[in-house]
Image (cartoon, rainbow, N blue to C red; front, side):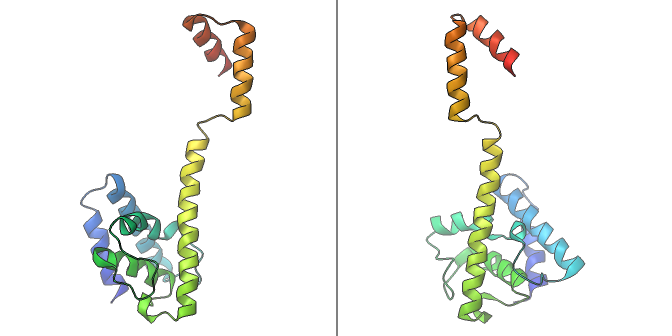
Length: 160
């Protein structure tokens, strides 16, 4: 399998629909390919933001694909998982990795998933308040005796 040939095919395939998960995958692939053209393969597995695994692992799980197994059949996601592996392992395919290298690659892949989930959580968390802040707001509402919706919303807008 040739990394450059396969990543070009994937970039082209995902460029057809840039919405939702296809857009997310296209963006990841494009950034990965751009990095590869500028610098070659990364020297070490440290670029979780350029991993394709967060964009594919849920689909693999849903389809019953055991993507974290070394010699498993990856079905219709084979090229995506192989391109990711090759990028983060200096051109080696999953089957070319030693058991130790594969284990390190899987640890890296799980870090990439965690990093993607953390980015999503922080986006959500920035728009929410803590329980303590909520309790404080409730206490202020009770003190102000804001009985009507109009007085409540006027007070709340003033807090923002």
